[in-house]
Image (tube, rainbow, N blue to C red; front, side, top):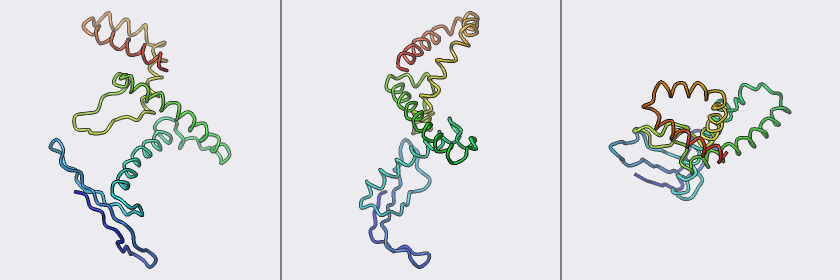
Length: 178
């Protein structure tokens, strides 16, 4: 269901005015229906524009999570204002580089070796490009420390050799990409 109403008078207290209201309820897909519709109060002029902007919000929220607690732990820095500004600039540069690396890993179809594919019930990607880029790089660096242990494990589990070889091939591609 899609609906777009223009010039709706919205008041709770004096001072509110007329806005546009976008309503959207995703259709049933593969036997699943969203529990609630989206009702979006906006000053934009079309429902398609409203939905495009609203969907982009999910990516922005993922970026905030990556920077605050998911990768760079910005919340735990306890830096003063001057250092916080410098830290945010460094994080922005590192975040961009890592996200571009993750995007490249996805484009070469190596993301599936770094992160689990989406579950059957999930329609959206599980991990951001940042997460894929960060953990892809960590996977390469961890190999230096774990290769002897992994070789021993492979000698004990020869039935997993094909998976191991696929992983090595993926790691080689990721290493060249990084």
